[in-house]
Length: 392
Image (cartoon, rainbow, N blue to C red):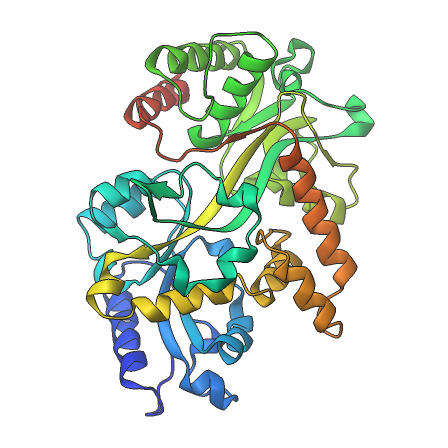
């Protein structure tokens, strides 16, 4: 927990008390950043207001939050939410998350459900001037609004596809490689329907001409078609495994257990660090696009810290956070403010690398993409079908 020696403002002290309560109750792993420590070297960081930021672990920039607080006047107290949207929704709807946190950072798709339940409240874009700098295609992500109100801010974006070994397979440009019987036992998919179901649906729609309208939001019959296809291939021994988590995903590549698998682009970079020839495919069927979006939790409004939350999210879009997250994770905040910040601070960031990352991600979105949806209309059926796959 933070070391607080009497130099916190009352608002910051209240947030720290909530963090201490959370830890005592065992409600999650708390990672307080240096930017929210009472012994911060900068007076600006010391005097910064705080927000409790409950987000996917990869959105954390560790001790760099200190510099963020100095620049923006807001110091986040970061807590990893585990990334799984199901437990997140449960804790917001029936648990104590709204008593503990102010801003959420969630994979997109559940905003409509959260808004209907009244556990998140709309953003006021007039209080987030940096939102103007967000790229238009990011503003057009289909899950950001509900009933005309802005419930979600696109904060991190990317698009996923296939990790493969060109020394084994040559150039790969289709998800069909995952289902190719010649690669039986040498391919893998993730043990998560939010990714693997949409990849399969994209392949069946685009390359097999199956009657699928929206791969990210399958109807009951479409879902049955997709899942029966996956179950058949699993029973036939097509898959080496359904991998779970970063470590296993990296290990499959590092141990050369597979020649191709659907997965996250950072696994490619990790494989290259280990001396492997690993590439990321640009499939003819398109990419699975995703956004990790920030939402304003109802508790922030109840506690009167909504303005501070707006100031925090405005800071996320200001350039520094985008440069740091890109350098640390290879993830992109969708704004040109990143490049402007890098050019203004050449001693901290390389503008050419910031620009290269932006162009790389933009190129993906310039083509065909289908958006990941963590809460499709039939999500309960997805859960049931995925359990059938696991048991097959």
